[in-house]
Amino acid sequence: MFRSVRHMIYDLIEWRSQILSGTLPQDELKELKKKVTAKIDYGNRILDLDLVVRDEDGNILDPEQTSTISLFRAHEIASKQVEERLQEEKSQKQNIDINRQAKFAATPSFALFVNLKNVVCKIGEDAEVLMSLYDPLESKFISENYLVRWSSCGLPKDIDRLHNLRAVFTDLGSKDLKREKISFVCQIVRVGRMELRDNNTRKLTSGLRRPFGVAGTSAA
Picture (tube, rainbow, N blue to C red):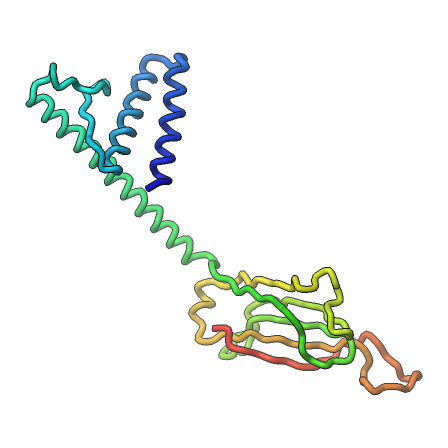
């Protein structure tokens, strides 16, 4: 209610400035005055205030100079116009709501927020932590991987991202919500030597990616 009245007041202030400018032609000025009076009557109606009875030009009728029958008929016309405006506003709002619901149903509107706090896993070397969404019934991943490079010291490789390892899986639409089950899968890939205990310098290798572990939990 407050926002509706505020918008109406802003409109009235703008229209008042146009009227006071004196630059509008007579026909436009007349139409603008009708818009102003219609807006005022509409605002009074939604605020449960008294209805002001006006003539065709928007001027307030003087009860001392207007007959009771004329006042009654003018009141009927004004009430009808305000009710039509209310019905029009209600219809427009319903159409907007329907369009929003249709758009909401047709586009991906759901997301999963992930905040990685720590990796409690003794790896011994650098690692890559990959997180993704998985459909166990179809046996396939339904999202891209969120990758975090983890150092052998137990901290992110990019130290600037410490306590700021966040990701949002935004590709979840109505089709994904209809799935019976969605799992959140975390994979750990060790990056380093072929064997952790490879002390033979002649066989020393580095930079090899080896699967180290995997874990999953139900996300839906």
